[in-house]
Image (cartoon, rainbow, N blue to C red):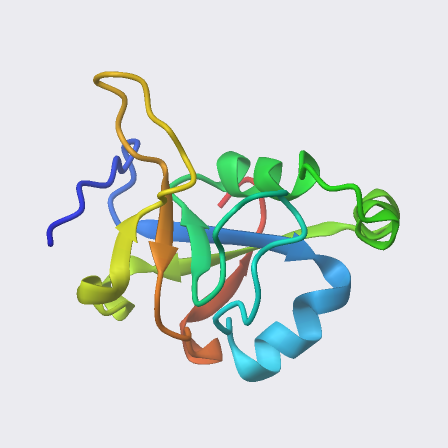
Length: 133
């Protein structure tokens, strides 16, 4: 299945994944791992067996920053921890595992900006990304 991803003028295509800083070292060591349960970041989201990626740094960042959870531990972690964004060169990913995010309802004509990836992502494919990258 071909997924059309808006590149927003970038020559090389990257996807982005954001998390809190306390997860950074584990991700750098082990890569991004498929979720083993449904999200507590967004109540009702179907996240088990997926890694979520966005086509833009700010979108990935906002997914963590604006999480919709009642879990006090997660709320405190987001409020007290720095958000870290990883970028992944899309050419390193197995395209057959990349799908539009089924949790996002797009307006008519709106292009997808959030994606589900259904395979672990090697730490070799991850770079910590600063806003100006």
